[in-house]
Image (cartoon, rainbow, N blue to C red; front, side, top):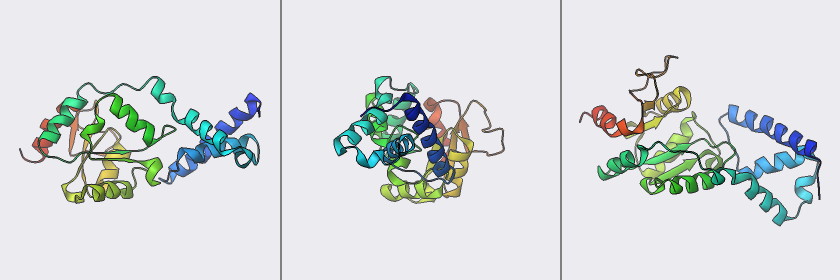
Length: 208
C-alpha cells in the first residue's frame, strides 16, 4: 500500500496537534498512538486495515531515528553520576519524551555509558503523565522507596523541572547558564552551569 507524500505530511502535522493537546494537559501516550494518529489523519481507517506486522514496522521506523545519530551528552555526566552513586545515593531519570520513546532513550543512555548509574528510569510515554505534574515525580519516588522531602531533582527547565519538583515537595537544582537560576523568577535551591558541578552542589545543599 502506498500513500501520497502529501497525505503522510498531513498526518504528521495533525499528529503534532494531537500530541500538543495531550502534552498541554501534562498527559502522554506510547508511540504506538503517535503512529496511529499519523495513519488515521493520512487516511481514515488505515491504522486498523494494516496488518499487525506492518504497524509494528512503522512504529519501529518512527521510534528509532535518534539511534542513528545519538544526541551528545554532557562530558561531566558520567563522573558526576558515579560519584553520587559511590556516596550511596539512589539516582533516577524523570523525563518527558517527545517522539523518541523511553525504550530508545534507555539505549541512548546505555550508548553513553550512563544508564547503569540509575536505579530507576521514568519516561512520560510509559507512565502517561508528564512534568511538571507532581505525579511523575511521585511515581519515581515510590519506585525508589524514597520520600519527597528527601529528594532533589536536577534539570534545566524552570517550569518543568524547578516548579515541577517543588510542586511534588522536592528540592531543585537547575542546570543553567544563569548563576541565580531562571530570569522568570522560578528560583532553584541551587543553580549550576554543568553536571560536573553536581556532586559539590548536592553536598552543599545537604550541609556537607
